[in-house]
Length: 67
Ligand SMILES: [Zn+2]
Image (cartoon, rainbow, N blue to C red; front, side, top):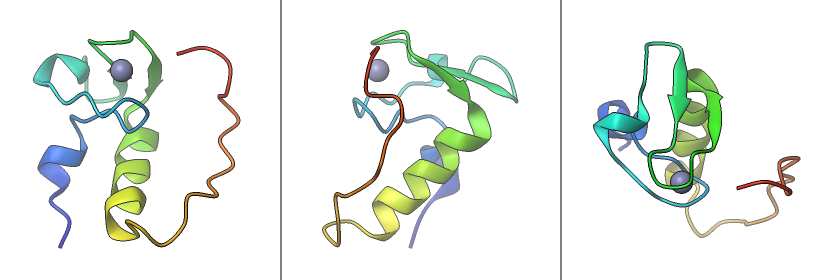
């Protein structure tokens, strides 16, 4: 079971979760590493990560640099 309330505030790349991460309804910027993403993207990534935890870590992340 995935709780969308928390996934919307956690940044999947570093695991930092804070209300401050969610700047606006549409913008998400990690308060820890400063990385920015569209909020919907972060929420979706978190849902996938939690929903398939331990299944695979082959996520082709095109944001290798930065962060
Ligand atoms: Zn971060």
